[in-house]
Image 1 (cartoon, each protein chain N blue to C red):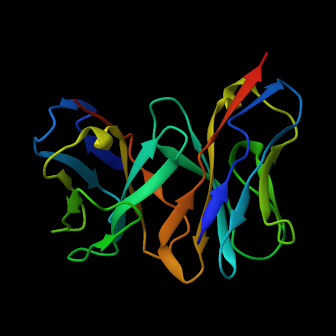
Image 2: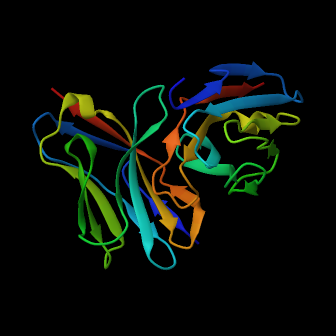
Length: 114
Length: 113
């Protein structure tokens, strides 16, 4: 069965420090991996994706994510956090051959403190 | 209109009542989706539509129905609401079923009492 795990409900980081939001996945075959961000009372917004190629993918707002096939992980990172990065972050996976089915993690709340 | 709109923004509904959540997109996207978001569970796919005239079941379809009469609209109907359907509902669309990125509406917060 396909699944995504975000082991941390909440991540706290000081502004200017690097941040990491963790994600591990389980999927048959090659995965398509995504990160979305949700601000309060808003729908999800696409941040970045991994389909194939370089394991380090860059996305919106200075975020990047590293695909690690051996660890089945796709952690979201940013070198220097901003207070405005505070939001709910979702990791998602989609099977290569079943594009209708996106599986989302439970979400990680990122708190960036001044 | 730009993107996806959903109506109503929020609703309190008595159990047993029928309710239709509306979703409209103006991007001429072929594929549309309905998700529910519950605390600690993330988003779960209810139904999807690859193109106008077709629909399919997602992960949690029971108690919900959808239709796709045209490209722009994808209403979600609860025939007889139950308290377990209390949730935030998001409509999303993508250019095609195989597109990598989905665009989300602002959501409808539904409370079934």
